[in-house]
Image 1 (tube, rainbow, N blue to C red):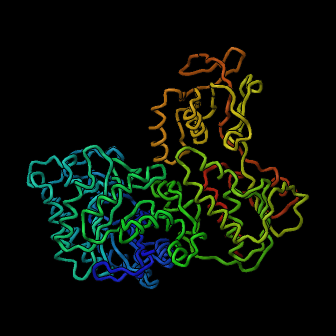
Image 2: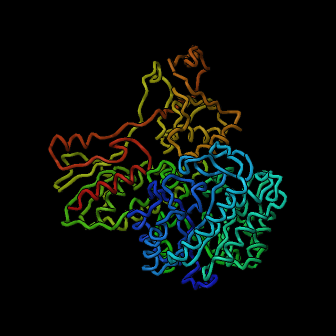
Image 3: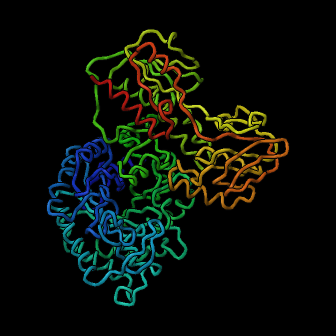
Length: 633
């Protein structure tokens, strides 16, 4: 594979052709400073073999910030702050690249302290914000921001910079007639803004290697595709820039493409890359779900790109590149592009994480003394705990009542458009099998049968909560677990699902796709509130097209009778015709009987994952990791 070979971009000789894409971390503070968490994160990443890391985006001015915890380049001490990360990357023989951006209409007022500013007052759908129109003086201030940012990058020791010219941010907003409706010089010549930015880059860059980031296609009507990108490609070549970095989507209109969501069709990406490849002679770097060995082999075989850009695949496994280059691909922990641990935690401000890599921002830990530990339950929480304990040097026995590892993580990839979730599940299982010396499957455990251990970690998961509804016990019904595990058949044509959280709504989509007539109810109006936001929006858009599916929020079921189902909605009591199958998806409750037994016997024990409090996979693996770390002394 040519991606293992060295490659020259500008003045840089890359040791291989793998580059890390800019991934927002939210590890900073409101001052825009580098934190210890940043340094640990970038240290972990740069030890993994990648040739160059493009840092998370920085805004060239306060008005261009996207996140309250975004790193800064425009403050008096930004050079000293960013220099800390550069030093870490260089120590690990990795080039450092700084991504320079201004978000324009996608800027976050909570981060900037001011309304967003853009070429024209065109609302950003993702934020709901309508920007104020940039005036000439403000535009000049942004240009000065670019100038000073490049000076800071040079002084801080960066090897390269990347100019964000795509993804629906400010430069692209000026280029696109859809978002630039000005009548001044910047509207009459929509390339004027990018030319002036490129003028500054050319004047200030010195020996820096310069990349230009584009969105190969933003998949918006009248938006930017390969044809519209030709102007950027031509200007990049004319101004002597060194490479094109191609991603997809835009931050305002098509976040699923921008964040490379798992449900999107690969074929569209392939078509765009094929077109872009023919439109420029500059070296091409391609981003977007590239952490797949077969896909890498295809892009290599068809010569679709010179270099590969990996973002979240390196968050899932910082050693992705080393493992691939050392013919250890089977040991890679693969990303499922679910956005649950990464994007969701950046948006809520807690900081970048990963459902299968709880220690991406943490330093290695060793136990001061080895203990014997029993971990009961091999779902994501139990596997994470058992793996981390083993790595720390403890003697671990992992018990699982089923015949295979995985727990309820098994349900994730069976939902519509979530097939890629099998990848992180399989990786988590392989990690566990590799590291944990003793695994006992098909073993039901009680406190009396466990034998002697220094400590117990109980990760026995959760069970279906059964609502108290008159007549429900006389219906043909099944739990959501029975449905997804295929342990009970669906009967008849008419299906009622009780509970429209993530599990219930995914079951509804499966059945609607199979031409059942489906009604799904929720006592409140929060449909799929426990689902990652982009996944939810994509799913609800699909469900809007299904005439055989009724979603009924604010609905309380009162009674099942021989003649139908009585329910209350908007203060009125109504009735549906009888259903053939009822699927219960009304939330989960902890399965913690074993923990209570251990507590009664005064054993040293911890309760984690759904057995403690039913949440998502990210929470489960985090709790498993933390439970193990608690035993370091």
